[in-house]
Amino acid sequence: MYEDYTMSELIEKTDAQDFLNMNNLPKPRTDQTVQEYFSHLPYALVEDLGVQPSLLLQRFHLFLDQTSIAKQQSNWSIQTLTICRGFDKRGNEEQMGFTLRVGDVVSIVGPTGSGKSQLLSDIEWMAQQDTPTKRLILVDGKVPPAKWRFSSDHKLVAQLTQNMNFVMDVQVGDFLALHAQSMAIAEPSQLVEKIIAKANCLCGECFDANTELTALSGGQSRALMVADTAYLTNAPIVLIDEIENAGIDRRKALDLLVRKNKIVLMVTHDPLLALIAHKRVVLCDGGIKAVLDTSEEEKKCLSQLASMDTVLTSYRNALRHGEHISVDPSLFNVMGT
Image 1 (tube, rainbow, N blue to C red):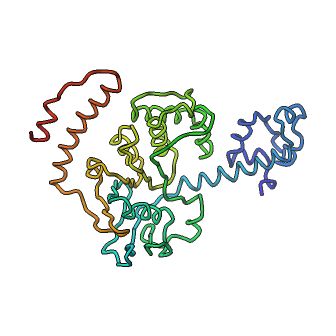
Image 2 (cartoon, rainbow, N blue to C red):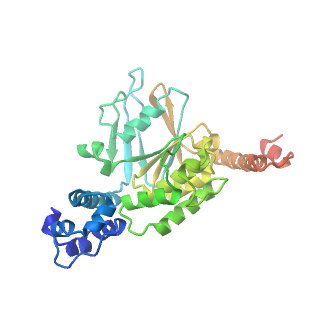
């Protein structure tokens, strides 16, 4: 469809200029069509690129298609997500469902095998009573279009797993720039710097744009992907699996994601994180057993837990830096001993 336009028109209406810049291609004539432009590229340039003009033209079309999709995706947002009740492993109907809203932080708790992963899977795939739990997922109070379930343009969930190891042999800055370009961000340099700065706020050991991805520690990798998800991922829901094991400042990570208008779902066994959440979903036997708002009494407990966590964090940091630690009386005051 792009053959109906001149190169000048495409540069004005699309991100065609970004493709030319990335491939060091010359400026087209004002009246030159797409086909004419790629057919008359200098032989020496084509030889340096190591690709035939016809293949380069295909890549040009693909680039314009992908950037167009990315822009449409960036405009996609939801306000609410409703999980309608289904059935537990014994076939008993769940007693309740729940609704999530933008800015909500929800913890998912329950023993191993209680159905936490299945609940997350139902949300990710926008279940329509076609999963083992028979749950129904509504987006903004409505059944989502069927094509959303299988379209990368309407991916509901971005996942941050416990183990995040990179295999790409590139530097951090290049990796982030590539991701930004795939999201149709023309000048990503400032955003790349911001993401790295935010990631360094989350982890103990700093890194920079020139650090190799494969050289990042587990905590650094997790911090990088939290910041990347906050700034470069359009999915309205973020799933975090046991962030307490990530080696990063978990409270700062949650604050960053919430400020970016995400719905945050976290599987956790950490009482501090469970109470930081606005509500917690309790699972048992594959079904939703309860949906509890954090009570005023629990908020008082949260204050105590936060004080204990501050002391434990200071101990952890001291040991990491080869220092000796001593008893902190405030820890025992908090514990009431």
